[in-house]
Image (cartoon, rainbow, N blue to C red):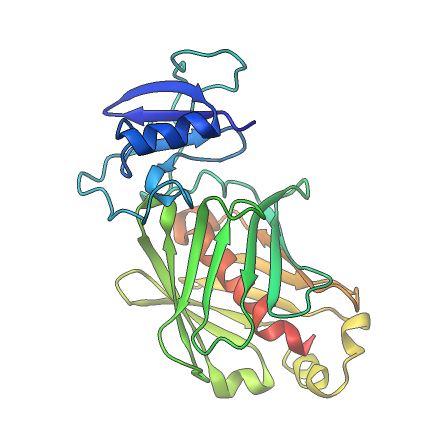
Length: 288
């Protein structure tokens, strides 16, 4: 049974069961902009973002209040106790992304569309994304689990079937806060994968680039090159390498390892780098 906590105007209460939470939404004691949390989630999120709880998602809270500290894991009922607040990056709900390495792994068997898992350092699933087949305008949504209860990240294409497409990355857990955007350098990526990274205000701040141009060309024509030398990428922001990406050698299951450097925290949102990794797995992974 899920155990939910609710925060309203700084007051925290719970835990509540799924049915209790639904009843509160129906009778009006829980509003779409109230913050909720359960064990297993890394940060608080607006109740209206929980699928099926309310008729539609709410607009962002105009007050822009920061979520309260998470309650400790407990099996007792009543008022939730307070703990020290988690560190937050750039005002976004980055609590789920404080690790140094992650893995984006394509689901092995899916007849139509695509599905991807986002794993943390211990290989625990912290994100899940399912893509619809034959979609003209890409809209990738990453959820906290396969039940797709809470949106963790959104990656939306600006245009329909754009060879050099731009994808906006937002944080639903922070009311849809823009984290930045990623643009595929279409003609260059025919030979060597390259993506530009933009800040929320549209300024170009860095790029994701395949390391070895020679191997990149061979990879386009000889598929088994990946079994000898996996694809490697560098994420450069402000002239600094903030992360390294590397595919695996498994010919049946595509996965991409994301390793952050010590430069990453101050120079780029980890969600933006992971969004780029998911795009590589979804779009470029077919070349692997």
